[in-house]
Length: 72
Image (tube, rainbow, N blue to C red; front, side, top):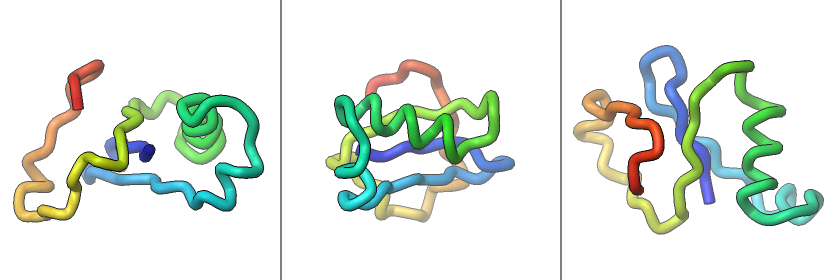
């Protein structure tokens, strides 16, 4: 699982290492919420996405928009 968020108009992705995730307790979602609370500025909107979501095509990355609670 990964986090995506708006970093001053640029789509940003946080992919935590499996070694760091292993040091945390809770579900995978709880672990990513902990990381978001720790690493993202207060009030930053983010989504947790599955590893299966393909983010490799950067051609239209500037056209991405954030839609809260959208299915991934």
